[in-house]
Image: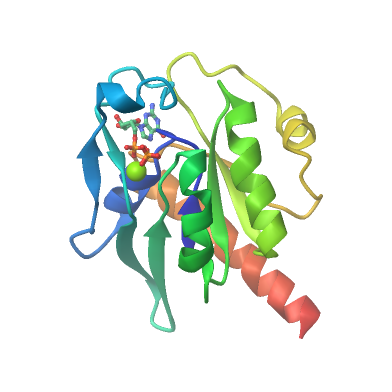
Length: 176
Ligand SMILES: Nc1nc2c(ncn2[C@@H]2O[C@H](COP(=O)(O)OP(=O)(O)OP(=O)(O)O)[C@@H](O)[C@H]2O)c(=O)[nH]1
Ligand SMILES: [Mg+2]
């Protein structure tokens, strides 16, 4: 599974929260050189993923998920074509304080034909949009799952992954 979304939305956090192995992270310090183009909503953020995150979670005895987190910056979008090869689906994290920042990621998943679920991460100051408003803003298909998520919380993050797995089981059964 891919875990995608814009800069600082919580991809590395979610994989670290749920992984049963020590997660692989490729964090690098964000420098002045990138300040003009890299502006995370979370001002306190000092590092960013520069290659990928990797973690693993066992859902049940038949199902083990390998989680690949992408970098968040739009300039890394081409890199995820490689990460997406062989992926079954994606969890797309969105920050409702800046929905437009998620359009690229969601559009890219659609271009790749990769089924996905949306996890709206709640941050301090997140506006209180209804599910219908979020669906309409992100132009989601009716069957695309949309769940609220706190990437720092294991139960919440696992629930988001389960919503994705359910969706994948459903879409695969329908198309087979
Ligand atoms: N309130 C809140 N904070 C979060 C959540 N997820 C992550 N954070 C915080 O947001 C910051 C950024 O999280 P990261 O996990 O590094 O974000 P990322 O998406 O991997 O960022 P890039 O790799 O730079 O694209 C961290 O300080 C997290 O503690 C969330 O669901 N809720
Ligand atoms: Mg990251």
